[in-house]
Amino acid sequence: MTKTAIFSNNLFLEHMKNFDHLESASRLRVIYDELDKPEIAAGFIFPAFQAAGAEIIKLNHQPAYIKQLADTAGQSFVSLDADTQTSAQSYDAACLAVGAAVTAARMVVAGEVDNAFCLVRPPGHHAEVDKAMGFCLFNNAALAAQFAIHELGLQRVLIVDWDLHHGNGTQHSFYDSDNVLYFSTHQYPCYPGSGAAAEVGSGRGAGYTINVPLPAGLDDLAFATIYNDLLSAVARQYQPELIIVSAGYDIHRDDPLGGMMVTEAGFAYMTKILLELAAECGSPFMACLEGGYDLNGLKNGVMATLNEMRGYSTLTDKTIMNFTMNSMPIMAMEETRSVAKKFWKL
Image (cartoon, rainbow, N blue to C red; front, top):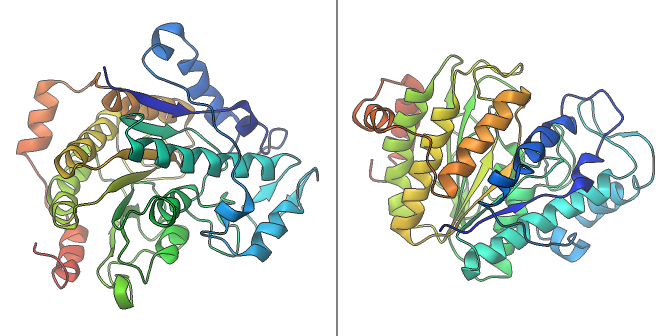
């Protein structure tokens, strides 16, 4: 039986608990309620973990910024930008979310579990090294990668970001590094405005940022095409030692922020492809929750991902055959391919 670890904690529900915010505690509560069902909980393990301290968080964030967030602890409301606020326990929740991410990285790399999903909030991929953005405080996925490189000795980490929005913070954290290959599909133009195909990295990192900026309206088959074709080809050449997914479910067809048309089958298939690449490369696999604002779409998308991770796929043979054998022309992917060809055999 696959050992899939879930990192969850009720402290994550306290962040902005009493405020009318799109990134609300209800997002996790609907997932936690599903996982509380005995027949579902039995399929997972729930490791203990602790909050990360400043020494770990400094792997990706500047000390002055960490102090800025620490100073919000205990304050009922602090606005960091137009989209991003904190409440009394937000700083503690953010430190615990980082603790989940780095513990997950350590456990999957050590082989203590087969894979892991950090069901945490606040999310992370917009957080820059020195500022909060887009509902995000600390960059959980980036910190998991930094921890894997600096503390676990890995040299090649693949971060795949399927959130509706481009992960500007993650991209900037590794823009001049070849230790992380950042691959993002995102609706474009959309918040935060970054993520053009021409953004490929600099210096040692040239070619290690791959952005696929997509128009609205794309469905499961479109994402399957990108994963089967472009992502798989690059990942096989890169041979990652760890795969981290920034798992945002706002590309779901019912999400109020997005214009994508992905269903639970699409999330399951993207997870399936990444798990197969992980097995082929001998790479551990983990995910960190990012966006997703339709509660049913979020819950069902997360469960589709988790079912793939634990080996109980919800995909039918007919669906797998359709996504595997068919493809669709995607102008944005071809634009990205033409740029990426300078660095990869495509």
